[in-house]
Image 1: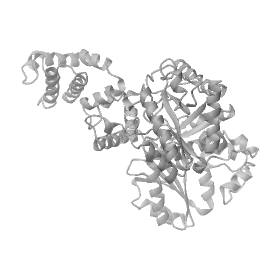
Image 2: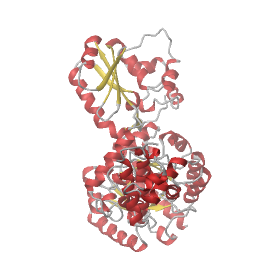
Image 3: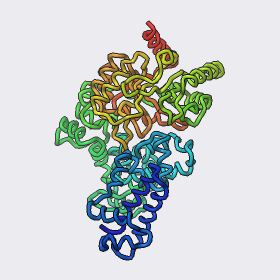
Length: 561
C-alpha cells in the first residue's frame, strides 16, 4: 500500500473523528499524521512498527494503526466510525469545500444524509439559512455536485436544455437553408439525457459534413460515416447526423423514437415504400395517428394511435393554479404575498396552494400548530386584499413511520387540502414503504400523495413501492397523485401515469416551489405528464378556481359527514 493511500485513510479517519466530536487532541494528531505520511521520502510499508514510532509526528499509537492498516487493509477504529455514519455522509466527505464541521450541520441540523438530498437542498436554498453557510458556499457546493453527476455521462433534461438550444442556434447560423431538428432522447423530452442527437438535411451533404467537422462547436470530435460526434463543454455527448435532404425525414423518424417504437411503426409499412417528405405521412402510411415525439418511447400508445384515440396532451397553458409550494413560513425564500402576486401577475394563474412543511420537518422550519393558525390568519387577510386570485390553505404533512400524518385531526380539518409526503426514514422494504403510503392514502384528510417514491434523479433511487397497489389505493380513496415538477424529482414517474388514469386517479402537476422562480418548474412537470399521456381533464390544477373550490369543498364535506 502506497503512502498516499495510507494518508487518505488517515485523513478520512480524522474527518470522521471531527464529525463525531472525538477528543480534539486525538483528532488533530491523526490529521497531522495523515499529512506527515503523505510527505515521507520513503514507503511506510517498508518500515517496521518500531521504526515508524521513531518518525517525528507519528508516534506509538499512530504507528500501530499504520501496521494494522498494512496487515488487514483497514483500521478497526475507522470501521467503527463508518458504522456510526450514514453511507451518504461518508461520501459527502469527498466534496470539495465542505469540511466535517459543515457536514455535521448538514447531517444533524438539516437532516440531510446523502449527496442527492444535499443537491436538492441547494436548489431549495436551505443551506444559506444554516450556520457557517452562505449563498456563495451553497453555489460552490451545487457546482461540485453537478460535476460529479455529469461524471456518469447522464444529465437532467433541465440541466442541458439551455446548452442544447444554444448549439442548435449555432447550427442554424451555419446552415440557414438546411433542414435540422433534434432527435433522440432530447426530442422525446426524456427526463435524463445521455446523448444529444441532431439531424441535418442538406442539398450538399458533403459541404455540411465538412463544415461541422471543422467547426468549433464541439470538442473531441470524431467522424464515422455520416456522423460527426463530439461533446459540449459540460461533457454531454453530441451526435450530429448529416444526410441528403431527401433522406432527412427518414433519419429524423428513425433517430427520434426508441427501438421498440420505430420497429412497431416500420412493421406496419411496406419495406419497398419510399420515405415521404414529412413524419406525418410516415404515420399515415402505417395507418396510425401521428404521434408526438414525447410518446415515442416503446409501444405504449400504438394501440391508441391505431384507433385514432391518442389523448390531447396537456400543455403548460392548461394549468390554472399551482399547488404544493413553500413560503418563508417554512423553508421558502418568498413571502406568501410575493408568491401570490407572482402567480397572478407573472404566470396569469387563478390560485395558489400554499403547503409549507409540517411540524415534523424541524430542519425546514416546519409549522407548529400555533404557527399553522397564524399562517391561516395571514391567508384570510391576503384573500381579502388580493383581487382576482385565491390562496388555498394547505400543508405538506409528513407521513410518519406508521403511516399516520403529523397533526391531530382537529388541525388537519382546518386545511383546504393536504399533501401527504414521506421525508424521513427512507430505508424501507417495498412492503413497508407500500403499507406506509397506503395508510396515509386511507387517511380521510389526505388530498394529494406527494412525490410517491422520494427519488432524486441521478442521485437517489428512492424507496421501492408496489406502484399498482398504491395507485389502486388512491383510486379507492379518491386521492390525487402528485407529479412533482422539480427536475430532480419528476415523481410520479411518467411510466405509471397511464395506469393511474386507467384507474380513474387524478394527477396534479406541482412545482414544489421554494421561491418564485421555482414555479417555472411546472414546465418540466408538464413535459413528463405529456410523456405519460396526460390530458388536461386528468390534472387537478388544470381546473378553474371555481371547479377546484368545489373539489376541495366536496372532500371536506365527505370527511365531516
